[in-house]
Length: 86
Image (cartoon, rainbow, N blue to C red; front, top):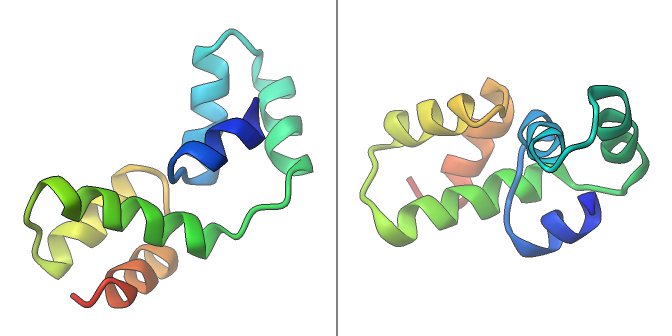
């Protein structure tokens, strides 16, 4: 299920764990699943940044803050904002 979500849209590591918990998995199983899949978290941050920009305008700092709220650390959020051209 973790792999299916990653194929569908962008997630941070913590966001994906929370999504799996929402689906009924306990924290240990959700964390295990996320640890076992091969994920490029930089790519996930960029996907999420692009998704946000598809439906709303953001300043660079605003997008970085939004990505941090979604569970990305400062480095990944800044990387994504730079990659999408902000």
